[in-house]
Amino acid sequence: MAAVTQERAYLDSAALADALRAIPALGLVRLRNRAAFRALGTGLDGDDLLHEAILRAMNGEEGRRCPADVAVPVFLDNAMRSIASGEREKRARDTPIETNDFGETKGIILSDPSPSPEDEAIGRIDLGRILPRIEAAFANDLQALAVLLGIVEDASPEEIREIEPMTENEYLAARKRLRRFVLREFGREKRR
Amino acid sequence: MSANGDNARIHLDRLSAALASDTDGLSDSELAEEVRALLGSPEDVARDVKAIFESAIAQSGKRRLAMARQGFESVSSIKQPRVLQLTAEAKRALLERVANLNHAIDQKFTLAAREGRDTQADIDGLLEDLVELGVIDGEGNIK
Image 1: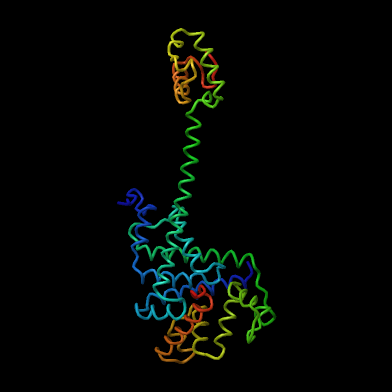
Image 2 (image 1 turned 60 degrees about the horizontal axis):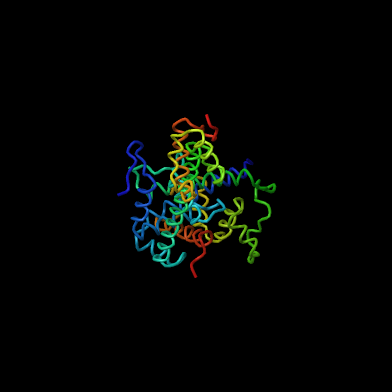
């Protein structure tokens, strides 16, 4: 039976491996979904981010071990959030984002109907292009655009619905459209 | 870090957190439907995640094994007297020199040793005994 390291109240690698293997199928799917969103703007895809979070925990890296009293999926999500935030910070530091006099990111043609494959690929991972790309996709969907802009400005759902009047159901539907777009455009390629 | 880069980072931090947290609010059927439409069948996605787990577990296991091996090699090289790293011929020559000087030790040589039928392990064992007895030092010098 895998042991919990009593003296530190953390799962050792064997106990963590057992706990991972015990996560039910839909729990795995939720984790995969969360990984895809957490990876946004990191240059990694969700699978890489999830793999990295597990590896660091298994290796017992300082600050990356799973506490014995925390559910493993919750722990992994927190780990992915932390790793992703660090990666975005590195990318923001290493890749200056140029803007024009209006504060718009240079080099972006927001309404380009047929971006090149290379431009599309860059747009998926370049920190400065991701939000403009999402904004452009919802240029004609004011409710979803309001949800996007509200989220990034840390507005509450109530504040967002005041700025762009909508019912609660309309708000939830708009948020769902936003979420599905991000998952489709920036999540891993669908299995063939 | 430019203000623009920092803004983009903060905005994406918030967006990714908000959308990730939405996943928890989905029922099992809503989640399955969303995943099926956008990522593939839930069964395939679950299988992929299991594969990610096993890959990380295996990679971590290999790393621990490599570290353990390194640790073992460094410990054994400290404990093992250097005389054991001599060539087989040098070891045999040393034992013969010692045997010539010391009657008691000479008797330890078995007939098989004289005829060269002993194993390397026998020779190493004898050399370790001699180090322990203080007849030779760890480098193979007769004291």
